[in-house]
Length: 112
Image 1 (cartoon, rainbow, N blue to C red):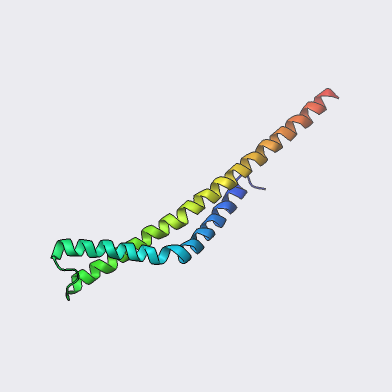
Image 2: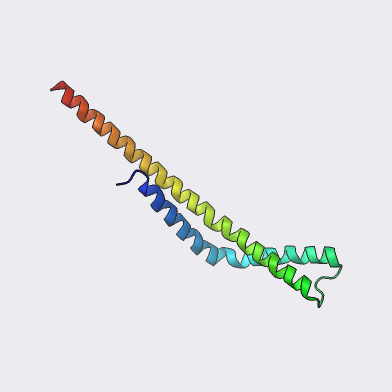
């Protein structure tokens, strides 16, 4: 087994969990929050909530996409890091146990 194989598997499991969580709970709120922020910016710049012009509508769409992107990063990165950390600790414990086992075997061999 490779030294950090479990950490990589934990990362993949965490990312998969994060994608599922994002689709279930992060897509709509990210779009909503990004849209509200975009409306506030457009209102501050133009003075009207949303005019008939194309530029404010494009700005709103961009802000909604930015909200979705930020939500995706948060929902996918955090579980991925948690999964990698758990896998890293499992790998570290496995490596330490193997080293201890080799030390005991070498100590026993030296006594004979």
